[in-house]
Length: 117
Image (tube, rainbow, N blue to C red; front, side, top):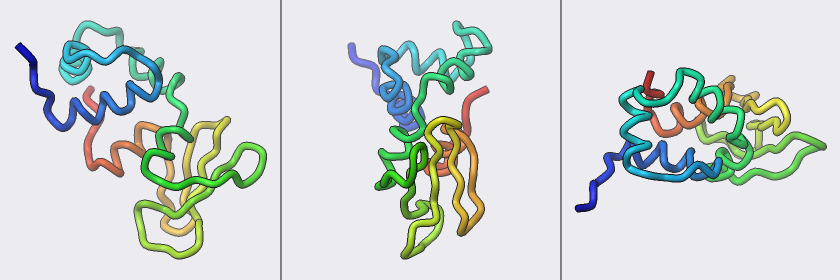
């Protein structure tokens, strides 16, 4: 019998698939309930997630220097790119609206969800 995933589980599958962790309904349930994985699971996932790849699923990014990518900010309307993603430091920042953070805060903000504790 196939278990149907709720929208939040599906969103976390998106992040997990981008860092090459096997997707299973049990994994989503464990992530959402906070059980069966050590407290540092979130930190390990964050270290493995490539923010450029995750943000690139939502924003068209162009290389703008050795380690920076830029694009139109998904959090406000703009015509010229003010949204920057730093590949090495794994953070984003918008010089127009001031939004900034890491890969988790980006997904939380764009999907309007919270990360399960």
